[in-house]
Structure formats: structure tokens, C-alpha cells
Length: 276
Length: 185
Image (tube, rainbow over all chains, first blue to last red; front, side):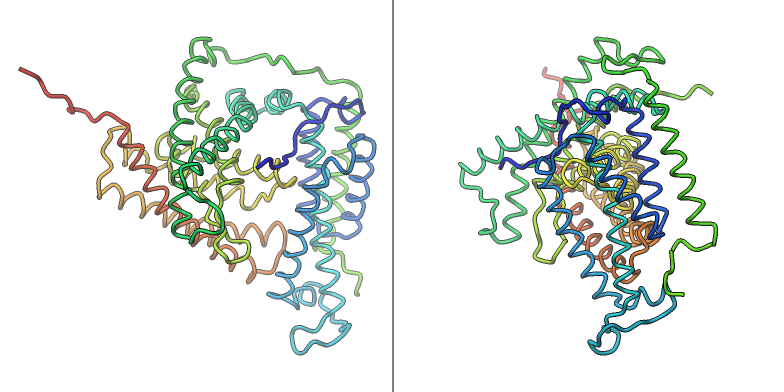
């Protein structure tokens, strides 16, 4: 059950050198830009730029390939579903209809629908590399410090740090309990009927949850002993001061976001329409 | 006004809760046979945590847990659904004082209260808010996202109704009821 997950990859690169706070803010700007716009030109720019940033981060494609394959599959299913449910969505948005070939009635393939689907997928492609990069280039301990840096209270930042710290532990607990229950003949696989499977899943999650509640007790006692939360501020071992490169990057990203907002909304329409 | 800070226990509950939410969401989801629809045991757990630790913990476990799950295993965050996870945790959590699970009593009346609350909250979240945000953010066709919301919401309501109730029953049994001791003469 060794499922791969994205985690920090230690390298020497300009992207790694940026502080976590900068990267988090940049990710937020970047994803808001991609979320707001439907302008094809901006989306293409965002995709190309994120591929470029990816290249300078020295992360190898094969290190994150498993996630990419999953996302491609998701996007493919998603596009097919959109087409099945609304084959004329593009025509409605762009106001014209160029039929490429006929499949009968509303399922005629139009240039507008294909263009719309292209845009939907570009929107995902614009964010995915940035989000993946953030995870693989930011040390988890620095992540909490960077949340605190951008103004989130340190108590909540610490919750996130705890979550990241305990995900591997709880994954191990889950595996131990699952194996123990399987040894007792409780089957979770496809061979069981659905109702039985749900009942069997219960015999794994109940011990997992009760042991996690015990963990909460132990950890909060330990933190209480060390007087966590007594002061208004807290320092972070992993926090780094902002450098020149951080300010430069942040400025560039803010400019990018402003240009995106301007181009997207100046004509009152989120969509870029090449058909008129 | 001096804002009351989160207690240490709530902070830890958010952290550990989010981690368990991630693991359950990734490993303990049971496919129903309908494409892209799963029985997400993690929402039963979210309901339990909201009832034990209250609305703020519920909201943050939903938000942080769902966002981390998306980020770590799928490489991107579907904000529209993450927001709804937080909302569901928050709104179910509003019933925590009424249910008062720490008293160790989880009788039929409380089971009904819990289920009425969770059905209303989740119907609102999955049938209304999630598709609405999908349309606003991703401009996906309305009929597609409303159908997705309907299927996922129905699955989650059943999951929380069954697994959430069972978890609360199991948890209530571990609490000591007041007045459970007899004087031995």
C-alpha cells in the first residue's frame, strides 16, 4: 500500500531559495489570476510561465509524474463529462456556431465547444505546476512559518504544521490497523459486497479515530506543559528573513495579477472571443 | 475587544483532525460503482470532530484537511469543494452544545437532532454551494455540476448518517456519565 505522495525535495535552485512566505503569496496570486480569467491569451502565458519556473526549479518530471498522470486522467474524464452534459456550452458563451462535423442535434461538434474545453483545461494546467512546485520546494516546517508570515495566527499555523507532521504517522497507524484486521479475516477489497465493505471499513476507522483522539490528549498536554500560546508572538526555527530576490519576485507576481485583472475585466467579459 | 484565543486542545484537534481527514479521504473511500462517486468515510469523521470540538475546529479541519489532501495527493486544490468541506464542518459544529457529547449521553433524541442538522447542512453545502462555486470559478456547465453535487451530496449524507452516528455512539460510550457512581454502604 505504498502510495506515492508529494513531499519536499531538497535541491539547490532559485525557487528553493525563496522564502516560504514569498512562495505561498505567489501561489495565492497565481491561482487567483488563473481562477478569475478565462482569457485564452493570459492562460497560455500562465501555462508557459509555470513551465519555465518549473524548469529552473530543477525538479525532474519523473519525480512528480504519478500526480500528473492522475490529473490528466481527471481532466480527460471531466472534459468528456462537460461535453456530454452541455455540448453547446461554447456556442452559448461565444455567441457563434461553427459546426465541424455532425453527430446529430445538440451533439454536433462545434469549434466553439472545443475552444471552450481547451480553455477549461488550460485553467487547470495554469495552476497545477505552481501548486506542485510549492509543495515540493517548501520545507514543511517552513510552511507553517510562512503561513504565520502572511498574517495567519500562529496558533492556526501550528495546526497546519501538526497536520503535516502527523500525516505519515497516521498513515502508518492506518496500515497497521488495516493489516491486523485483515489477518482476522476482515476483507476490504472488491470481493466483498458493498454493505459488508462499509461495515468492515468501520472496523478499521473506529480504532484509528479513537487512537487519534488519544494522541490529541497527549500532544495537547505536552504543549500545555511547555506553555504554548502564552505569548502573542512566536518565533519559528525555520523562518528566514526576506531577501532581495523575494521582493523582486513578489513585485513581479503582483504586476502579473494586476495585468490579468485588467485584461480580463476591461471589456466586461471574462472570455476572450476569437470568433467575432 | 480582546478576542478569546483557541485553546491548545482545539489547536491540536485541528492539526490531528486534518491529518486523519487526509488519510481517510485517500485510503478509506469506498467506490460505489457510480463513476467519481465514493463513500467518503472522512466526512463521518469530520462530523464527529465538529460535534466533539465545536464549529471552529470543524471548519478548520474541513478546510485544512481537504486542501492538504488535494495538494499532497492530486497536486492542485479544488477550492469550490474545499470551501464546502469547511462549511459543512462549521455548520454541523453549531450543534455541539445542543448534543453535548461529553455528557456521555447520546440517546435517540440526540441522534435525531444530529441527523436533521447534518442532512440540512450537507444538502445546502453539496446541492447549492458547491455547484454554485463551480459555475462561478470554473464556468463549468450548470447541469453537470448540479448533478455531481446531487450524487456526491446524497452519498455524503448517507455516509455521515450511518458512519457519523456510529462513531458518535462509540465515542459517547468512552465518556463517563455524571452520576454514574453509586455510594457503597
